[in-house]
Image (tube, rainbow, N blue to C red):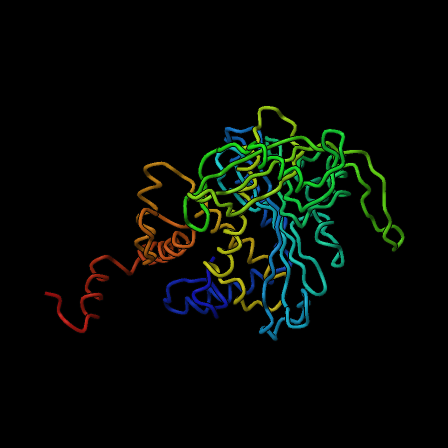
Length: 413
């Protein structure tokens, strides 16, 4: 489903006799129907995830967790908006868990979603979090529930540095969850010494321990990637809120892999550097693979863009409540999954399909780029409309050609 434009309330369909009105009305009824549960709507997405996991060449799948704000400050009809940060920052907050193939880095499907409004959390979880629960406290229940999704692979939960929380990492490790977290500078035990992570990074650099591991894209340019690894122990106290008070808790020392990866330009200037902590202790998983897993985390940003500014125009939807918006997000996600799967497909048939969809989209691709997910989505929606038109019993190709010829204000030579 895709809005016809930024202000449309219904999907983009051809306007036949009463068709635009009836489609909009049907969409409104569907999205407002309390009998259509989010658990039912997410099931086709999870089935896509199960099929992809069973066919993966890796024994690991990645589940990237992230949050995004949905800006609705100009939507006065929505009465359940929440203040995200300051008083002018109004809308909903969406958290998503996106499944990614651990071998190819292909984005598969969103497996879990929470949409937090001012009064409720509309969720694909059978036990939704409370509206006042901190976003990081939503992670552990999702990790627990992911074991019930029928994914025939080990899951590695990939999270940005917002999840750099020692207490939570200890909890996840104790419960058997695998994690890969970007972290800030912190004090750890290394070679029986208490040191800062930045000191270990300096040691890697000084002793020339960074190893080239291939190339990566950085702002559209090809750069060199390097990686270095060691084992560290997280041994310090962590903070927890107990009976409303913040307390320091002594936990078990946690041994993890420290992976530092960086990107360099042709002059060996460091463009970016990430410090990663991971409890995947499988010796067959190299430090480069861990760095690559984190690099693939950005795919969830592509998914958010498809929903928002680069495709589905989520922030322009006119439904008047969070529950209807949540239903529509899941339906729209199905179209996103279609184009993400097509983008990842290397087959000759997929190549031909991409060329057709790009042509239909009218988008101009950069030199050497066959397709992008937003362009495929635009072309896919036009293809659906074309198919709908051509299946109409009162339309044939000859009529369409004649209509096109009659509509021209001049004769082509």
